Image (tube, rainbow, N blue to C red):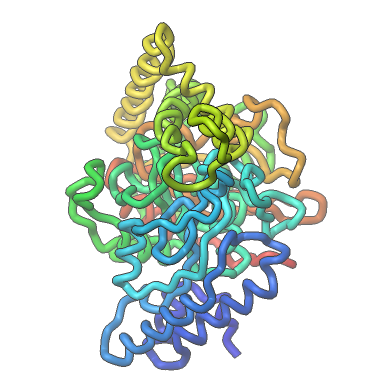
Length: 488
């Protein structure tokens, strides 16, 4: 008997087309899996079985009427930064606990038109600020490859749901690496598209010049299918790009002969885990064996990525999070005076990491410091983007590690915030430059008797998601890493 929760989107689509399974059966299999496993994995903040089954039944009716789409009837997990009609949106924060948005994100509306099924809302670090989901106001999620360890963040719940086969795919958001880092740590595929490729309308704002929705899937073909369904211009988001959306699946080929790839030396930072470095260099050998040429090269301003990001992102979040005042929606402390209510609402409603970043951002924007910090950071951001522009005049794509560390055990994160921020050091420059990049399974490192996943980061030219997916697909087909399922 077919294990329905082990199927990819394209595999399930084939069975649905042949009438061998129904969307209701597929959705029920995932709901059963959630009921059996999520008390251990803790991927979901909210599960909606009744509405999911109703959506699945509607998908079966649409298919019986002759309609077809690769996502029709596919059960998805949605990161709780993305609004879905009829489901609460908390952004992982007490300040939004119980909030029911009167609208839903453009990406969700597009998936709904395709007939996708929404299983529930996935856990995350509060307001997407974190690396492990330990900053969630509710509970940490766990890594299916070692339940003692974190799945990464901030889209850790989405990644854990896909890796634990509690969803056929998921949506996450990536501001500085929050799709790619958890994908790397959970042996899943996670893509951050070009800034503006997917509408941010209906996404809880963190840093508006950086936030992007990204698909998180079991394999590269599924990633291409999901991206194609949600990408495209949206008049409600002025930052979306007008460029047409290609058929990303048409780009999936195993032939990458003649492609020129750059290997940035700055991405092999001091302190990188030796097992990760070995896995990435082995991946480079695979790409060479497929006919690509790989040269070591330099992105000289990489070292400034972290300080620039933590100035730009915190300044933008300071402005975006000012709206949470306990007056119109969400948590309110109920104090007698306006200013007491404002202070107590924000003091109790926000977690420590969110408060830390609000303070940093407010300081960077304050009188006397704006030019010295925020404005200078924006100038250096331009230099970082120019590094990539120069690189892509010579190379078709770049390859690198996603994260220099293995997933740490829950409760054992570095106590120094700066040391912890370094876990994003290899994903921040690409986010600042706005270029597309993907994490694809690239091997394992054995640690305490467990195989912990490693992801390969492939970075492409702006709007060349097709080229990034092509490389990722060729590498995936030449290896078997994605076939290694969690042992538990």
